[in-house]
Image (cartoon, rainbow, N blue to C red; front, top):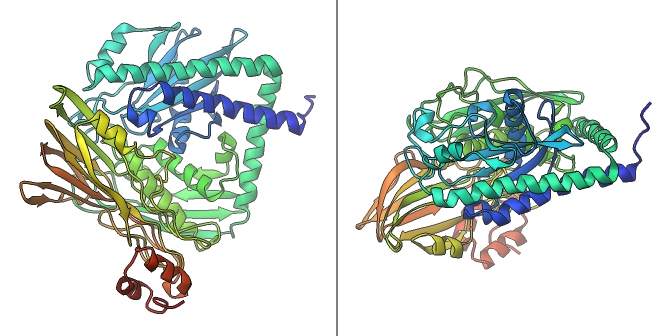
Length: 561
C-alpha cells in the first residue's frame, strides 16, 4: 500500500511544479521578439498528463484560457504523435483540434525522465500574424477559416532537438513579418527546454514515484475543494444570457443562453439554447467554450488550485448545432478573445442571485482586438501591430469595479505606449480614463479607457474584432449597464464608424489618419439608490462625473455628504 505524502512534501511539490511553469513563462516572455508576448504577456505554459493531456500544473503568469484549451490540443498531439524521441517538439494551431484561433500557436514536447515519457510540456503564444486576408489575422468579415490564416495540424517542428527547416520554411512563407516571428518560435521552444531542465531537477531531488504520487493527490484535492465550494451554492436551476454584437457578416446579435443545474457538489451546464452557427468569425470551438466555463468558475472560486481535478465537478453538455460548437470550415478568429468572455459573463449572470457575495456585474468583456498592418514609411518594410486594451470591471457587493482592468480570460495587458510608438509608425495622441463609463449602482462599474492613434508614416490596413458595442456590460441586482465600446476612423475631415459598431476589416489608413477607440465600462452592482453619498461626492471631486451627471445617475444621493 502506498504511503500517503506528508503535507509539507505535497505543498513543496505543488509549488515546485507551478514554479517550473513560471520559469517557462518568464523564459518565453524575455526571449520573445514580439511586443505582444514580451510586453503584453499573451502566452502561457503548462505541464500535462502523458496519457490524456490532462492539466497537471500551470504558472501564475499565463493566460487561463490557454491553460484550459491546451489540455485538449495536447491530447490531440498525444493521439497523433509517432516515433517520439527526446527533443521532439510539435507545433499546432488548428482551432478544431483543441485550440482557440489561428494566431494562438501551441508547441508541445514529450518530457522524458529515465528513458520514459513522464509528462508533456506545452505552451501557447499569440503570433501577430499567421497570414490570411488581413494583417494580424482578425478578419472581421471572414466566412471560412482559410481566410483567417495558415492552419497547422500537429507536426514535428523540432526532431530530436533540431528544427525541421522545410516545415519552418512553410510556416514562415505564410507570415507577413517572418523575420521577427522566427525569434518568437525560438523563444517558444526555448521555454519548453527550460521547463525540461527545471522539471528534471525536481524529479532528481524527490524521485519520480513521489512526484507522480503528488500529482495524483493534487488532482484529488482540487476536485474535493471545488466540490466544497460548489456545495455553498443552493441547489436549483439557474439561467443566464449574454449577447454578442454580431458575427461581423450578418448585423444581428448572437445569443448565449446558459442553463445551469446545481445538484449537491456538481454543476451541469447547458448552452443548447444559444444561437445557431454564424457566418462570420464569432463561432467558438468546443475547447474554447469549455475553457470559458472553467475560467468563469475559477473567477468565482479563485482559491481552488487549478488542475484537471478542478474541472471534474463541471459537466458541460456539447452545444452541437450552436455557434458555440464550431466545426470546419466555420471561421473562429473572435472565439478566444471575445466569445469566451461572453460565455463567462453568462455564467456570472446565472449565478449572481444565488451567491451575490461571490459575484459581480459584467466586466468590459472585450479584448478590444485592433490590428494595423502595412508598410512603415520610415523603414520601407512591412509591419503588423496588434494590441488589445483593458476596460472596466463590474461592481461587486463590497467595492466599485476596477478601472482599466485586463480581460476576463487572462492577465495580459496592453503593451506600453512607448514600445508601440518605437516599434511602429504610430503616435498616441490620447490615452486616458473613459470617465463616467461605469454603470451606476450601489457599487458602480469601473471605467474603460479612451485612446487615439495617428498613423505617422506610410500606410496601413486596420481591422477590429471587438465586442460590447451594441450592448454595454450588464449591470446586476438593479445596477445599470456600463457604457458600450466605440470605434471611429477620422480622415480628411470625415468620421467613419463601422456598420457593425466594433467589428470591421481592411480599412485603409493613410498618413495622418486617426483611429479612436473607447472601451466599455463595467456594469453596476445593486440599486443605485443605495449608494453611499460620500462615494458620489468623492467621484465628483475627482472629476469622474459632473454634479449634473451624478444627479441623473444617483438622484437620491448626488451632492450630499
